[in-house]
Image (cartoon, rainbow, N blue to C red; front, side, top):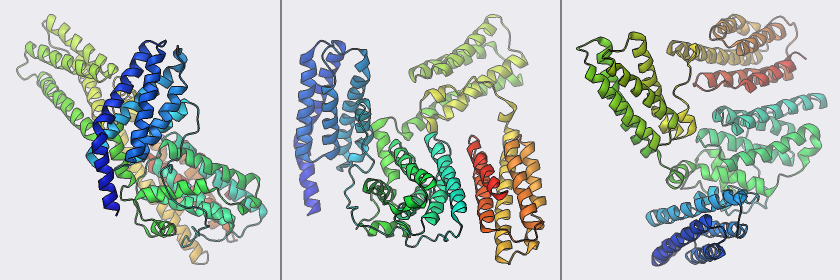
Length: 568
């Protein structure tokens, strides 16, 4: 029955495909004429009529994404008055972009024979945000009944919280701070792996504080979602960032309202968004399939990784195109570097080579201008001009001049190599021509990676030693070598000029010495938990610098806060 329905839907689309394409072109033409002449009310009305016509066709062929996009586009067009001033430019630009994406989606559906309306959700939300309307959630097209209560905590092993009310507040504040650090990292697009780990840790901390209360179910689900996003390398889109911003509100309530806040249920809309993330992950992990099975769902056949790849086809050049472009430009640069190498070695130097290299740089500059990488193009053009001057002076460049030329070429090459990961953006354009500090030396970077690797090993050893210390009824022999090991890592962090991390590590070593080795009494659970949080935060920080990422000082602040709890 389903196959028959899909076949009928596809045949219906084929019958009206040419009409859809023609109507989109007419809508675009009408909108373009109105943008040129804002007094032309007839063109604006024609655009509206074409959009309504498209909406009717999409309803007929059951393309849900196209239907909703046209509905929002009509609302947008209605907000544009005849004689619109420049303050309406954002509405007109967004509307024009929506029509372009709609045309691409029609081509996509014709090729794929599959309707994935979620691909159009970003542009639909752009239309709504331009009109200052609340954007649709990521689960907008997700049909599932959330009314019945489900047990999301089944199978999630979290120890019970045994502290008093004062300890409850301390842990709640620390868990909220952990969640906030993760959320800040998400919003700043900084190290999503660490953010997902921190969210999972904070969620499990809140599950302990809820102690089986209704709000604990939401936090169990948040922990599963964070683990799944980490496992499946799911990115944080704008919609997902909004979801986790909503969740932060409930962490705030646990801090300022207290245990009373744990008695309320999370809204169905938030639970639907979280379940949708599990569905879209495509994960077959037991905890994911267990949650989905309660809603009679199976992991999506069109998981997030495939969705992202298909979205690139609609919203810009794909990775394949960028890779081909980068490789073509690198080939040109490799030939240019070979010629520079011949001049540097002094192997039959020929002034004609200067002209050849200048020609190559000018061709490269013209290509970069076409790609809107103007800064890179300027650097290439300036170096070509220097080569022309040397040729006019009938002399080869000196050693320093040649090194500066080579440095510029390598800077351009580095930026071009990053087109694949960064795209053709202003950020890519800014990579060349910047002053390089000693910290950008390959030798220094190698030292950073070695220290980071050693530090991760030492922190893992520390956590294992503390676990063995607790399980052996506080046998201090397990901790005997730990302070010396941590001190050696402290020296490495000082060497790579990271005094902040070195200071935190020094405090960790001092806490272990004072609260475990020197103390005659066994450390309390709150001390052990706070120390574990500090070690974990420091480990995540070290993990970040070991992956060539910007240092996340918020993780060090989080570790310092946890160590403050150890010292209480």
